[in-house]
Length: 71
Image (cartoon, rainbow, N blue to C red; front, side, top):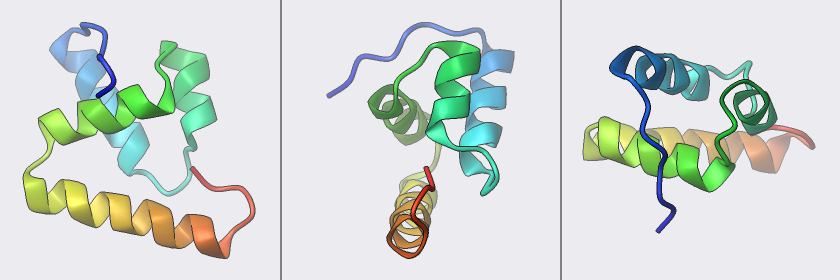
């Protein structure tokens, strides 16, 4: 499992909002917060309810299958 760096609560909230957005990809999150895709997924797993995390991962996978460049 990817180890997530320590972030203040307000930054965690911003990262979660960016990751939940369909218009922000993992590269943008990496550029702004220097956190890798696996670390974003781990942070999301730790901060979302299990059902919300599964729904988010399914949406990211489904969009990724339909679009050439998505998260």
